[in-house]
Image (cartoon, rainbow, N blue to C red; front, side, top):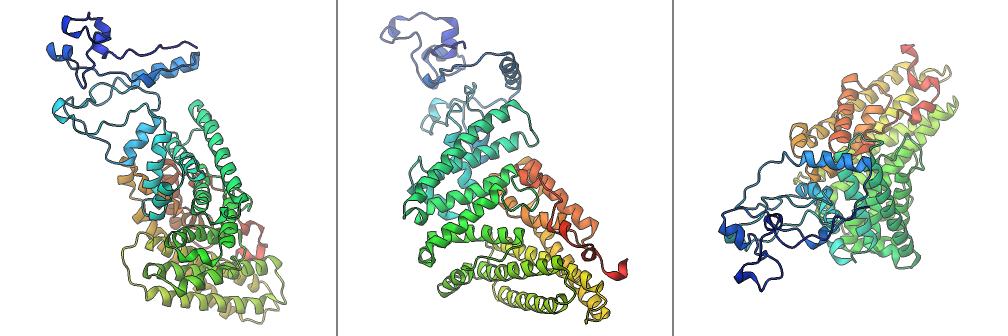
Length: 523
């Protein structure tokens, strides 16, 4: 393990020429006067001063054939950068630039990045030799820039708390996924994964220790930490099929336990209510994915919000009320289809179809009364609403298919066919609504050239709707499924969300009886 040595404080040019100390420089400890951005000798000879290395550049490197090969490749890549202006310096304009810097953890700053003397009053740029954790918080804050409460939490809680560890974990994974979107055995990725496992352990231990105290569940940073961990699982693609015990599902159920313990008292603060909406949205999506009823406390929570509702909460409240009803209807529809009971299926079908129509009409009335304000979450809530409708109507038409095979069904075939046609119409309409929203979010031409971190949050919010369109075995057209699949592929490859790539065709419909796949007149 060779030591590269402590770097000399002299500038590169003076160090390479081994200049002697002049008469007026004898009071300096080194031949170079350490003037920044240019020493006097470089100014005298009209040479561009290459700058100085920092004391923190002392490094110990493992020398092996693999590291030497990577080092040579890195040096070759550094010989073709764009030439920087020597007399000016433009600081990074966005967090996307900081992402590039964060991945260059142990590289010395190249020449040509020094300021001129007349611009020396500008703030010095961040050194590229900073550890990547120095950039993780800004990356997370820009990804979730539309969530103001997260910025407040990061400034109000300690630097070594669980929220900071979760931010390190999330941002580093995001950077790795952007640089290696399809890598599996890349050595750099495997090394980073070991480091990320360490941060995951620290985060889980910090959350566990915080929840041991009675006050732990009331800490907003703990709720935000578990929420970020759930989003992290989407980055790594931990959801496989409809298995209800993936890490993502565990985190969402942890969110449910926390907001359940907090009760309605915590909904009276602005920060607590904003954190509640982010967490409760994932809890409801978990119920829809697993075909289980929503939380029994949901009605109490939503009623408390309605009593002191802000104007911006009218749309999310209407959608949340519908999603709570849809989760229960979907769960019961799924049970009826699985049981395939000829005696009880017709009566249960009529009741469930009536409940679904009533819930949809109520939601449509509430949403129609909410004016469009340009809220960044407006399309998100509408997309969630469409996804719930799509899933419910898919199960409704599957139940109709089952009923058409029952000779003793009291409902006439003509009426069943009419109701099935309506379900198919609603399935196509909601799928088109989801795809229309996704096409506005995913401007592929722009995002290929500028992968802004802000686009990551928008993409995270449409993974579930697009997955539902792409893999739900229903009457959707090939074009609709293909468009959803291409959008998911772009999200996974270009934006670093591997959940969009790690999809499985295993769904609850795979366990449905054969009669649920098609009506009797199609056989």
